[in-house]
Length: 208
Image (cartoon, rainbow, N blue to C red; front, side, top):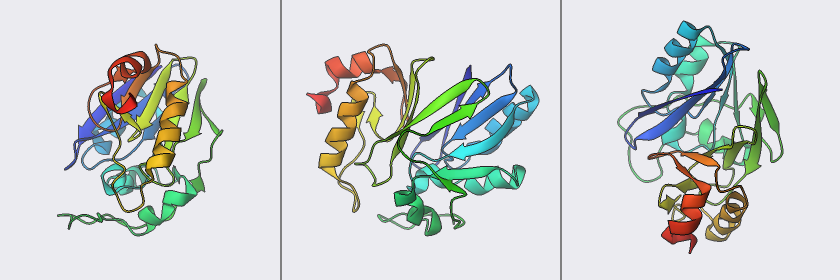
């Protein structure tokens, strides 16, 4: 497995390209502004096809570059949980006016808890983790001991629950699911540096 990260946009949001280099297949997770083109160029240089863009949730900073992906992969599929699709259909910030426009679209399909997305020999398990948003999804690669957490869990922090459609109780339950993973599980968050479950279990003040 190869994983590449690119960070961009007004909120310094992380996009990920995960590839089975032997199979020549890859997947994009999230599409922050000014991140996707560089990852597409990298994938094409390596000879990796990218049939899917997976969105952890629909907040503007995670979906801004979705059109860049579909421009380069017209037959590619953009997937999100159904509860967050309205944000994709009516994109924008609920807090302030963005200095750019995000094209509206509907999903090509829906992610649900327990889905297994296969990328070559890799298996990404979709975990329904609402709280930060109603349809938030994280992706767990059990064999690789990797959690792509979106805005569920950060190094030393957690996703916001003061947004209009956030749910603090749902966030607590979602974090409990994450904390059930092995300590050595690497966490790749939607913002900030990588961490691991064990470190967060021991030192994250929001998990005390």
